[in-house]
Length: 448
Image 1 (cartoon, rainbow, N blue to C red):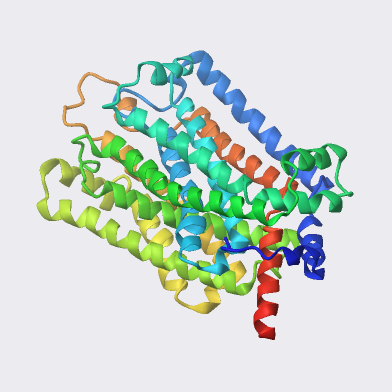
Image 2: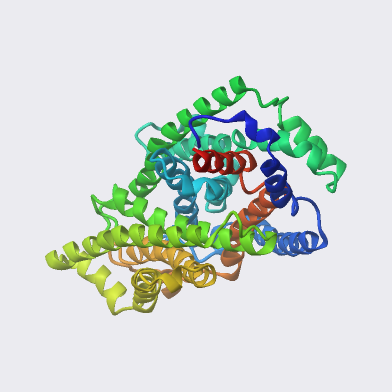
């Protein structure tokens, strides 16, 4: 976000060129309808799966007395983690003055809004009695991390939505006369959401000040959201969860998943919307370097997280580590560590793999591994309780997700994709006014 706005750019020819490029894909196309139809049909099947669970209870899932948190909570942690990328790109890098993040800041905020919104819904899927959700607010105890989690997730969602919408207002005003190819209802939506924006210096001054305040506020909020999420596990004495570094451990893992999600979305926006002038090779190169940086920090915490209990080798920790390293979860554990962390770090050190297509493939692997990483954090610990397992069915001793449970989990992912698709297709995905201003600044500097 620039500190000053040169209003002359509104009359510059560059604005027309930029607006034409960015607004060209906006609207309802046949491809969009086919894609949305596929998503909605798939989501309908997932909603039916949730209806079965709502009707019959959590017995239709693999959750039992021992493993009461499974794919649903892993999915929740994954969504919360990925949503933090909005803060990383817009706030941390933006406030540090890295101008290369301008074209991708809105992409990061779209991911933040979509994933933070769905994170709250994922919790409902884990509740056997979802109608009792209001009780969390009515009778929640301040001592409970669950109440803190609900509070910070909601706060983060509100702040992310504002950070997405406020910088969008000038673009909506610019776009009103340039989207004649779109349906009337969308043009009316632009008219309403632009809130009589007239591009006056005073309006820009208020906008920039408001956004800067939000960028500062959202940093501690984002840190709180995933730190509190980690506390849901870390405040227990269970082996694998009983850790004092879970807060930074979760945060660095969030930056890895979020950065990978941004790269994936950058690639598809650049390819499908022909926006290679704004999402350049340099942007992918820098995102690749950022992904290496956050992955190295995350690798450090992974080593520390397992090295310390392995050195002490308490009985409970030994059983837990055995399951991860050579036991039932060994294949998943080592695949996540090698394919989702070590190998991407090595590959992205070479410039070839920081080009759009290779880094997109690498980011998909990283993001999928990030989801399975959350499953590894959540499930194995519960399969090794302190009390012995006696007089229970064999099926209760090991967690196996059911088809119903898997469908509901996929449904949450589909909902996030639907939100992202709508925001990307119906509104400018690249900030028009900031891109035009940046180009004018370059021209002015070259003339000096």
